[in-house]
Image (cartoon, rainbow, N blue to C red; front, side):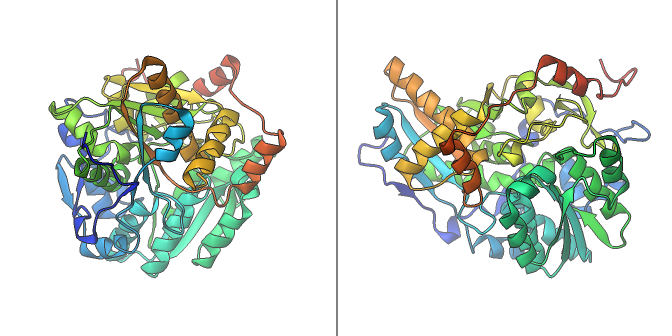
Length: 461
């Protein structure tokens, strides 16, 4: 480590923004299992995906290339809010009285309040370049919907958003922001689609899930002329676009002669975690370094920690391809916790492969009250109110720092602060009033979800 005091904020200049995305899959010893067509159960190719996604994104989804050039118009947009800062959490370290050095990569300095804008801009650009004039999507907590609304407004495109109902009710101001950028927002499940109506007919009081909202958005995209769907997490091209986070992070820590012993990120669908680890996972895969990677998820939606590694549908309506991933079952509806962006039944197939093969070292599941305890401590000492999703990583970073204290180890910890909690004041109020509950599904509830994982003779073990 450098002998001089490391600055609180490690900032790159505009001309130091990476001009290429990094594809982790290029350096993996084995690729993840292929997506399967929901009708034929055969591996999907670009032609199967082009009715849903822009053609360039379909090519990126399957590319073996290590680096992909970032288009000029996308870089121009990035320069309005990137590079994002790397911050040394001196005040938090002091409060914890830990010998560990704690850094966080902050992605909340834009109106969407999160890292989601990194892929939203790219996806909107590629759709516009193809001549597409309308997009659809789903959103949980609202960051992704806001990000894509911003990007579609910039490229003069229409957007329809299906927002998970519990988040729609908890965060009405998110809807207002999306509408400010011109998006049309519906609570999901809705009565506008066959997928939504099926869920409402079976469970009229259903609070919604990302799996249901995805079904509605994909159904709308494929039934509306000149329209494509945008996904904010899970898929390879999304993690590719988010690699800019990890590439910047590595440049920043290199500037102060630091190398993380621990890299910690929250995990819902995998976009933040996949982006954050990109530069350091390349080191791990190529033998240049060996940081310890920790994925953090809600105990209410324990995909890595209690899920099954199997082929499953990515949505409730079974209109999307099947992916080999850790899953709680496509019909699983998590409790209505405040970390809406982490309420997904599955996970990125790439990250699942890395986890299953031991390159992603550990997954931890945490309860929402301990998450908000950590978020409150962080806010008091680091002057940022974190989003509930981000606070999962904060919780574990604090725990690891305290473990280092017990062992007397001056380790380096880096975590992803994916976004700010400006629209989550209700959740913070609930925590401070003592009315917030912890949730974790019972084994019986998990079995109900597992029962919807398809039986695929000759494919599913």
